[in-house]
Image (tube, rainbow, N blue to C red; front, side, top):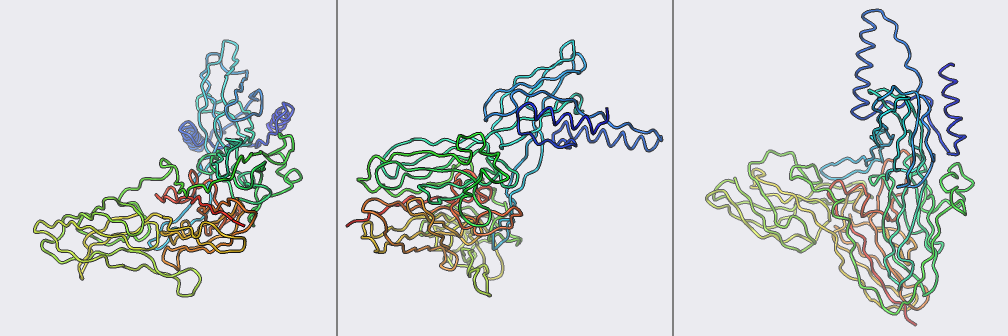
Length: 528
């Protein structure tokens, strides 16, 4: 039987098993250690063959690896079996997946967002020994991974011997399902894909678009919070595909080429949940919801970041604490400086905007002067200026040269929501300090009762975002949420920018660069 015919039969058998399986005719080049050693061995064999004039035979096509069932949810058990192996052979079961990342570029005056990236690889799911008849049977668990089809390979001595596939179905849940207005609702989604439009999801609340759901660095799993908004009674939360070019949900997914994503659901188009608001008697307290700490990268002092220079310096400086809000204080300590020297201390920041031809540049805000000790040490309390947020340098210098630098992270902070009670049509003001200037921290996307209103930037105003909103809706409590957002990027598969990034706390392109960008959970009351 020819190799091409074997491949066709292989795919037909898998389809007959009841799964939506899209396997490729050719094998993937393994990306694990086993795969690398296999590739190296093949190269060596081909090179030897060229020297000796020996003609190499094409390796046989992998046998069919039977997978039962062929689809299921994260955590579901499944069985892999096959025959025709050498008796007693150790068989490794490999799972094909991808290593995800956000592609960014760090510059002294910007942090650029480029795109999402996925590098294909394999991981070992388990090992099993063939019995005396050459039969293998392995009981496995579907790993927490991206959704849709994953190739499964049986590998013996670094060679693909058999092949099958398993499809991870998408699932979603919310908790709790009732509570007063402002109750945090945790949304969990598993099995989000990574190919094309499989990676897009949107959330709607009472038929209003709320924001984007991502699961890039969390490998297909999303966990985030929204708040219960509206009058007492039942409210509907909907999750399905988002659009690629404009904020919103794709409303007829069941008729699209991606209909298979939700085909296992009763309505075949979206996840739909009900939340019962039990009361709205009190304004919920303001809350700043920070990213999960273990998702924020801890950077070394010399890790590239904005405002960092490449100047040769002689001293060593530290700040305690190394982060804080505007007008906070930090102790600057330095050593290895010239003795008894008059020095100046500067806060390195950016000035300008993206809208005018002049653009922007780095600037140096004076923080005061000091004199080093006879041993070349320095200790001085500094006050962080009311300025742009994000990464900055505190620079110690004379008029002739830079002596020492140390990074400081200026965090976002809430100034006010005023007034708290308004009539319909009246204005109230939300003010935030410490908003940044890069493509990943200069934008706040705003919702009113879980409906997107637009976005605000803090670059031209040096980190101050003051938004004047209007009270609307029935008398009662109304929620205002401000989320991190991507200002712009270069994604080849388009993505929505300047829209609420609901999953910011666990999956956001700025997290690997040490940015702690929060959501602001605020509220007002509309009165008669």
